[in-house]
Length: 549
Image (cartoon, rainbow, N blue to C red):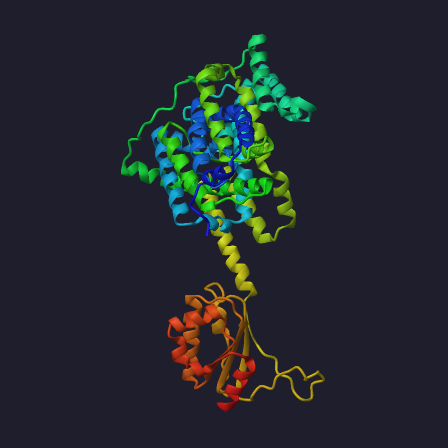
């Protein structure tokens, strides 16, 4: 069973000085990568820049300290941006803090109740659909800053379609200097990883930030910077409890659920990716507890929702990080950067932030996987994929996940009901030109039906389609291919037995598997029909029918 023990406590038993040095270096490098991303994701979430840093510091440290993975790096991620922006617009920071706290509690409960493995029941099509949808919403949300548009609206723009409409309406206000800055930063972000040697190790987002600042300040370009739009603070995170009411709790409860589910999915997916990179196995339930504790801590210290970040986790592994110490160093390094360098974040141009988020959106879109699924997956899976994607873009992630899971469940049940069959045996006359060596002789008083597939409420009606011939006094049901039976199917068997009683027909079962037999025994059906009418093999059942002639 999955241990509820942080990985840190396990790996420290064999920890070495050499690994400490590698972890410190990896932690510092990941912090440098996380700095511009944390600021950009905070802005995309509709909060001030330092709150992204607070999240990476507080949640990053707690999740690494308590986590079930050796190398997981946590912090703000793009998946939460649209959710957070919507909560802030509707319920303010107090609502966001409360939703994050509740999500943290849900995550801890999921871990304590050992629900980590249940995440696998969320279909791949749903995770791919909403991930691609989030990528589109992030991309659309940053067009305004990339083009330097002067968008003026009475209400804050929340929905993706509202933002797209605003871009179209105000396209005439394009600031070409902003476009130049954004374009140069995009070229750096795309091309920098292809440079040889030492240059490749420097995070391209950091180079883009420095280039953007240099262009705007050095050339006196009229381009909005973070400092023009937001107040920058380098104060340390402060503990504060949110004021809450029953109305606020009810208002943010669906968002809290969404944050918890999304944090669980993303963090455990990141753990799986990390396991393959370091040849290790994470503790899923401990990871959920750590994610819950991290989100609670982040909320209490002014942060936003956090989860495991796949890109930063991969960067940690590639730079030598092999224990949670690297994640803790990453958080401490960001704390030092916050105090010393945060005021300089005011100089970062908004088109540079937009360019960074364009790359984030592209990398998380997984468009190749999306296209491949559309070409190769069964039609039912494509319906779930496209529906989840469209609902994420047009509405929000809450609606997309709810409808996606419901639709996937319905289509799965439809698929299972299609493979469930109740078919009567074909009877061969002596005159028929067939090889009868392998055929069984059926008593003339007996009807035989072969039942196959799971018998659940979606397929249980097929039991009642069995035709009873009053000229015969035995109905034999062969159930060797029935793996599962639910209450609806059990009720229909009872109704079938009642019909048989009315027509004085004996009901006989052959090869009832363990789960269906358990259900039949608990319901009293075995006693009702008679245990002598439950036979282990078809030949025994045919002999029983022969005796009842």
